Amino acid sequence: MTTKDALHQLVDELPEDQAELARQWLEDLRHAADDGGPPLDSDTLASLDRGLADISAGRVKALDEYERERGL
Image 1 (cartoon, helix red, strand yellow):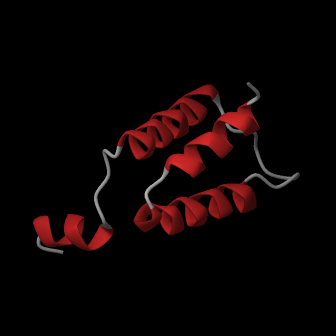
Image 2 (cartoon, helix red, strand yellow):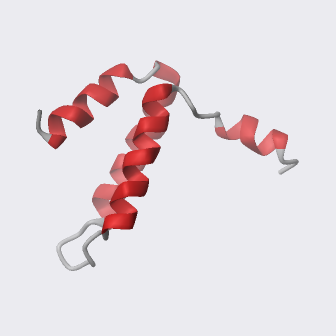
């Protein structure tokens, strides 16, 4: 399975209420990875992989819930 295939599978498995957040993250990542920008290092890529795994496993909270729990 290619990396893009794996990403497609993760996206397909997302609950609908998390899909928009994932879209925004991927769009931000795409814009950050411009041709003139620095390459992403292995620590950053590993962090992204962990985040995607958390999303896939449902280990996420809505932003409003996170803010409410922290009194923000």
